[in-house]
Length: 222
Image (cartoon, rainbow, N blue to C red; front, side):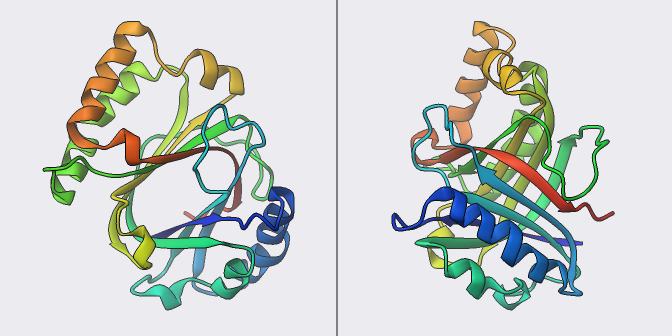
């Protein structure tokens, strides 16, 4: 299975609830009817963003039989209709921490997900970014993000839209409750210092974009 990730920012003329309902109730059924769609997860931004300001309103993760170009993305005109900005990336997916899921497809997942659109540091190549993220940062994240319940990494293989060229990776950090996110993001002040020092080695935190969202697994795939 190949993966596409897309991010959508709403125009100021539409409220977030209208955009979320359009994506979940109108676009998603059309996408699920596409025979090429093997898995589909939609993240919709929460009302309480916890201080984040510039993140997307909707993030979509698609599992497809083939994703060689933008035409593999189903019914994307429907998403363009509710977006001021719409980006799509072909990605390599990694899931170093997986929750035990006991709720059905189509039901909102418990807890909250922090989504980060990541940009590599100056002087770091994309390949170096991905290698550091996977090999050095991931063990630190699993050690010090003690409330982390599920963790996906999507390393960008190709930006299918020009505005997405600055993004090197998309991370989804899922916490079982909002309290876990707020109180157990780090194990300690020392752990926070370790994580932030490592982040500085491979990514530009000041140019990354983040959002807090609710996950909707509409088709889990294999």
